[in-house]
Length: 226
Length: 112
Image (cartoon, rainbow over all chains, first blue to last red; front, side, top):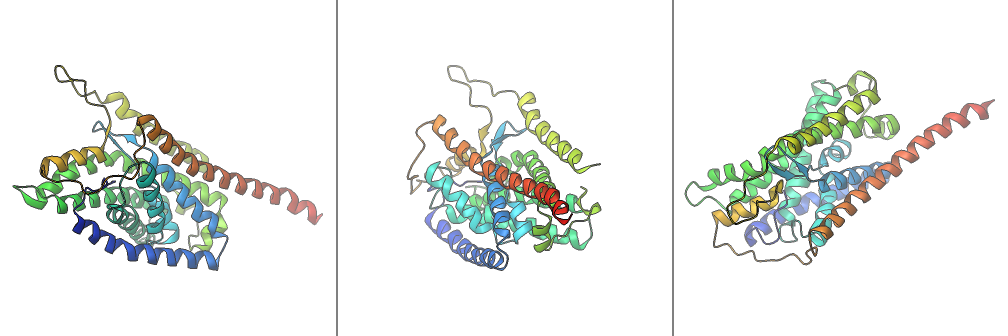
């Protein structure tokens, strides 16, 4: 999902940055507020950052013969709200843009939007909807994290198709081409990501029950079954 | 199913999902006189190729400030990223586990 440095026209790069910036600011504000109210949550926030660090660095092979990486943003979104991951994704993307030449500063806005805004929004929305519908928590979490991962890669495809429409078929043909690269490869990875998110959540619900309760995630035995 | 059983099962499925493509995907065939393309190439790079195909005249207008000198150094930095994350996760769970054990051991003891 990393759009390489310089690979978005300046107008697009600026546009995505303009969309992402307020999300990062709002996310920072909401995270600060949560941690100020309850300093115990700081460590759990660290867990969300660490989970994203690990997952977004693991390039996994896929059935398409290509490899790609999970996002790890579903956990933090479910725990801390939809915008909390925007600043966290920015940290990860900056690390990769500055040290690894993965992504870039000019494309940071677009990449933050796919990894830190859309993915987490989807994860949060599905998780909330699942809770309202009283679906089992593990299942909801799995679906939320998996679809968030796919949504991130679909967003990248849309961003690239908007910037580089097919000379003949226009946006939709370009979207099919980019999504063909990203989304299909991501399918098995998204499943892995969903499973790993349920795994870490299971571990957290055993060891950090109180913090999760503070975040409004009371866990019942039957609720945690996938 | 107990929690730890469930966790082990989740991990097992992830391992199968990762191993399956490694075992089943066959490498791309080399064109005569050329090396075979790399297996499991990254999708980010493939998207870059698609951009070049869709817009051959497009010139990237910025270059990375620092490019890792070689694939090995790139692996080093990715490993560093994982180590930072995994290190923190391990530390956190270790603290939590020990804290729970201590309070379980010393709590009732003090009461007596």
